[in-house]
Length: 234
Image (cartoon, rainbow, N blue to C red; front, side, top):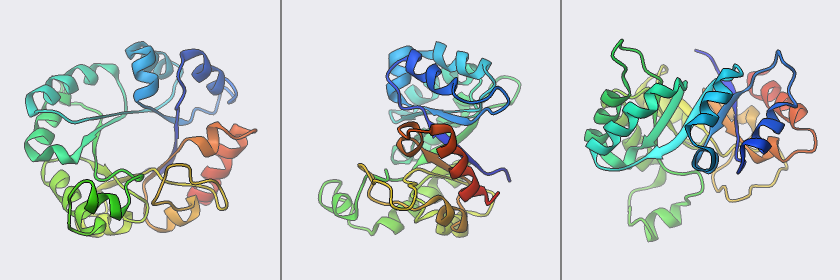
């Protein structure tokens, strides 16, 4: 199974995004994540443009709505030729199955579909006091992951702290895509459940997502290569 570092392109404009990507050599095309900020600012065209440059794309829009709405939205997203997209597991099984149906093209192909379990900015205290979920964080994540697996999804977004147990629960082929990864000694920002790239590798993460530790570094290409070296052990 391929493992990789995904760079979160958390920029507000096309110009800043392409300026960042232009720093990489022509033969180095990082796997990138396009999230809500960039997609809402620039629309589907930015996805097409970055794809045309040769990058793999994780379209991170975290759909969460009634099943029919998500199914129809996924049918639209399936035409963008992204490599991976996602939804919130909290939408439950019917929504996830509808999303999978909508994302599958007439020829049977589709991007990878993964489900967000709990955001890495959510603490156990927030889970209990604000979301009124009385079960422990780990138990909640495992339940959401099992629901996603039973609904036919390819994997989940989870904290690197939970990746190994997701694998144990849902199988080695079930993907774990993990934000909340920081270099040793780096700032945590708004993340609560974090791990270094090296520890994420040891925990069995398939993909790590890193934004600010790379994009806001004075030498982002070097930071990206450091992340790959630590995560892939190359």
